[in-house]
Image 1 (cartoon, rainbow, N blue to C red):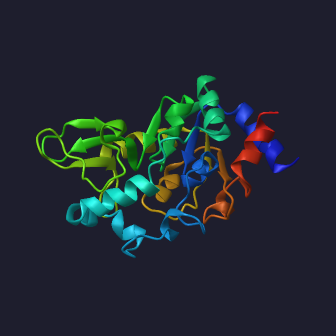
Image 2: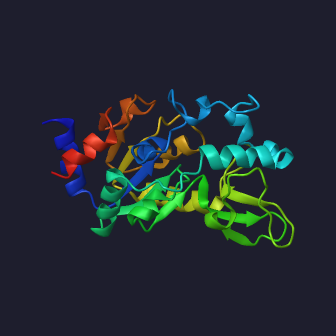
Image 3: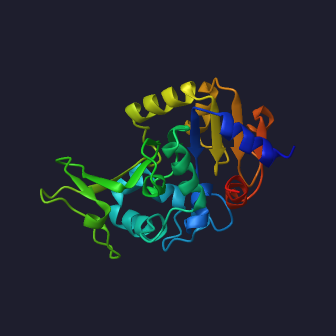
Length: 242
């Protein structure tokens, strides 16, 4: 039996699946990942400052204008739509098979596809808040292509509710994500190299039967997986949908 056939059988038998997703899941929606040749970290910037530095807390605080120029042009994709994989995982949740989605992505595409229980480890581009009075704003409220820094009606700077370098994860989101992972009988890890911590370390909390890895390249967890498939997730989902 092929790995794809085994995967299909495991999904059919599982009752508490957790989807653990990373940037690679959204590349088929036109959103670049981080570390590939065309990824975010290999993008050129006007000031030749490394992207990793621009999306840090200290850079945001010291130069919000340049941060927002990069953020809106390289990290926000208003026209992106859920792809086949997002829709497939949402359908599994609707069927009562998926317990939760734990994602490193900030693009909101799981929710756009219909997933209800989504734990966003790194926040979301859809939420933004004033650093002074904590009033919340939608992405539509603040998005623009100029260098003007979005400001609240109180005068405070508005910050995207995304986790930047030098910032910690939200404790409540982490607690809920770990609870779901501990409860799962199957975890499907897709679109992540599992090299970014602390998120990658979450798999250590999995106590279920089936660890499935779906990623184009190898990961440090491949040897621990029941099934590790290195292919475009689109091809995998097309097989599962047959």
